[in-house]
Each structure stands twice: as C-alpha cells, then as structure tokens.
Length: 313
Image (tube, rainbow, N blue to C red; front, side):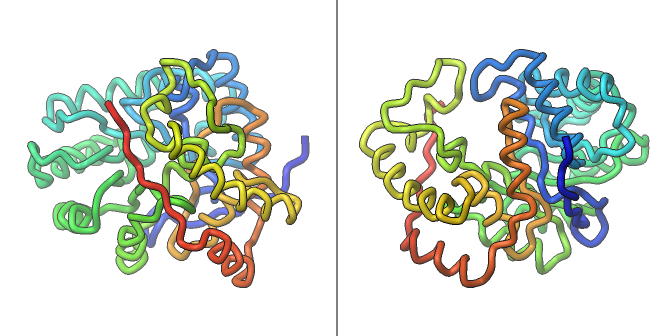
C-alpha cells in the first residue's frame, strides 16, 4: 500500500525529529477493552509502514510494552523509530526506577529508550530526586531524552531546574483545552509538545452514540462524558463538527487530529488505535492543513463548547 509522505518535526529545540502523527499504544495494551496480540501487532506494523516514527507507551499501559516489543522484533525497524515510554505509578524511588526501566527495556526488546517520561508528578517524591534518577539512566545509556507527562507549567519548570527536559505530554484536544498554558510554556521554553487524548477517548472518533455499552475492561465505563444526559449533550455538540468535517470530505477523527496539528507549539499528535483500519483512517489527517479561515469556522461551530472531564476510579 502506498502512503503519502509523513511530515516530521523536531521535538523542541534539542530533541529528535518525529512524525507529526504518533502511535499511542494505550489501546493495544487493553486499556480501552481487550485487543488480541495479533490485532495489536497489525496496528503497529501498519503505523510504521505509514511513516509513523513515534510510538508512545508506558510502564502502566497493561500489556502495551510487551505487544510493542514483539511487534518491533518482527518488523525489525527499531533504528528508524523514536520509542517513548514512561515511569508510571507513585513510586519514584531509585530502586523502583531502576527496576522499571529494566522491565521496559526487556518488554520492548531494546537496549535503550529514546524518550523516558515521568508519567505524572508525585508530590511524595521531590522532583530533584526523580530528575537525579532520570539523569543517572541517561549516563547509563538506557535513555536518551527526558520528558514529562501531565505536568503543569510550574511543575515542568521545577523539573527543568535539575536537568534537561525535551518534551511535555499534556491532555489536550478540540473540546478540552485546560492545558493551553502548558502549550504556551513549552513554546516559550523550546520544549516539544506531544498531546495525548487527541480524540478524547473516542468522543471525537465518531463511532459512539448515546446508549453505547462499554465492556467492564474498557476504562470508558468510568468517564462522565460517556454517560446519560451528558453523553447526549456532548454528542450533539460533536455531531456539528462531524458534519463540517464530512462537508470537507473528512471525518471527525481526522478533523480532531488536523486541528491539533494546526496549533502553535505542537510537535506530534499522539493518537491511539486498536486496529490497522483505525491507523489508516488516522494517517489521512496528517497531511490535512487547516487554513486560518477554517479554524475560525470551527470555533464558530463549537461556540465555546468544552467538556468537563471526570473519571470515577
């Protein structure tokens, strides 16, 4: 299958070049419901064939790292990829960090991680100690770059006091923009931005309708915007965007991705996919360049609509 050339952007001022569309590996780990290993491997291989060079996973993404490791060993494309994973959980001790990185390396079947990210700030552990551990991993050759995920500008600035950070990974999408300050901070300080939840867990995917039933192993059973009257309200607002996308020969998911890539400071949109077909649909958005006029139209259609994001654990 022939694919259009994938644009690449540098991750901040000092990071590697990565594809503007990144493969988010939470879904193939089972976070959004069971996915067979075979299906996950097909999705990864399709992403690589389509020119995606950035693959993002985490210690806490269930079986994601293991599926990726098998995918990459079968494909033999490790040297062409930028693999990002994360230190998850509440334990940022050096003992856990050492164990976590070795587990990630083993599962991913590689001897280094391109971007090792702190999955979320943990007040119990001073950021100075966490960054000291990250720098030790760099010195050991186990990681190349350090990134942060779900950090505020203040938390990111504190981490930067103790070592170089190349990227931030905030939740950010068309209908949830509460981390705009993170984008602004990163643009000002030369950090790359890798937004996650670009499709807002599927709300911007166009597939789900009010009344949809999610299996118990799908985290979306716990999100407020997939429930009751609020689901209907959100769906009604998103349908207007979907109609606009269809009028332009696209779909809502492609619009959500193209919109992200049009925002100042964004390096790559991390978009999860469960299947090769989803990857193929997502890839079409990478070359869609929204004009200023189109972006203004989208804002008018949204009319200030945003979702609240509540997850019951």
